[in-house]
Length: 434
Image (cartoon, rainbow, N blue to C red; front, top):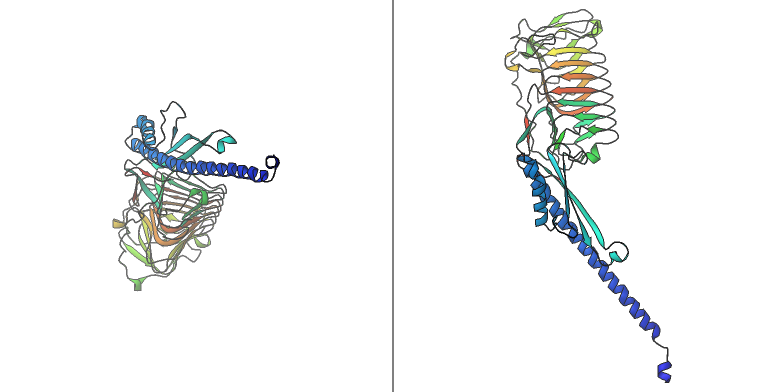
């Protein structure tokens, strides 16, 4: 009887029982966490497969089959939408408007499924909702003509800030930089066009498009791409360096510049247009600038030059382009349409090109200070950093090729697809992008 009344050891029994319950709880928690991780991996596989299947149907223009194909692939990966109890759901979003991949070439699949729990169910619902998304590009051998081509391979080679606007009208922008900050659109700036092709696989819009900056929702972002920004450069015109003339345009007197015929070539060490209120006339033909600037100033009567139809400027050595404060220029490449109607005189192999800065010439180009520039023709400067800002407004009816482009201060640039600096192919077959 004394033994039965003894209370020694009762606490030990209680502690052992409590520890057993705790151990069972931790085991249940571990099982729940492990199961949730497993279900998440399955959900990601299901979302990937569903997005890819929907993208295939989109590529073949069979939109009515997208949902069925996505459901079937999700089911093969453990997410069955036909179950009577706790079925999975597959939601497709064509042309997503948010995220890193937006536009008509993309489809996003989001899969969701209730997952039963043991330990977690004691505190809330015995089901946890597992939701995962994936995005695929549709493909279908789509192409976009390139009209802004940036050939710098490192760093930020396209920067829009402080209200700048770049519009690739009916064409696309290709950026060859492999850096994660290749394209930056900030401070209320806008980038628009058909496509933005990026060599970089690490660039994201979340990290680079912010502070009020935006990329048009209709602009398809394609990445990563192989370098497609490599238009064929024209051959250099033949000229005699020894016969290059000094700059005739530094005085206030008006003058006529250029060769005597559209098929002719003239060489200047530098050429200043519109200095000191002058209003020079630019004859059609080929102009070679070897050491100084092709420099446009404000001119007279709200214009910097007369003529300018059927011109081709070739910049070499250390020559560069400077369009200055208040300049208002009008240049039309050989064979292109003139502003007032008609066609500019032809200049042989250089038709369609208004300015070509030789690839060995790394001097920067500058369009600044409220300048207004109309150029009907391509501008090639594959090794030059181009800056456009401070309210400048430029309309390029043709392509722009540069090493980099920086736009700020409300500067605006419209490039159009009258010349093709390389067709960007995207989506030759469906593929996952996110």
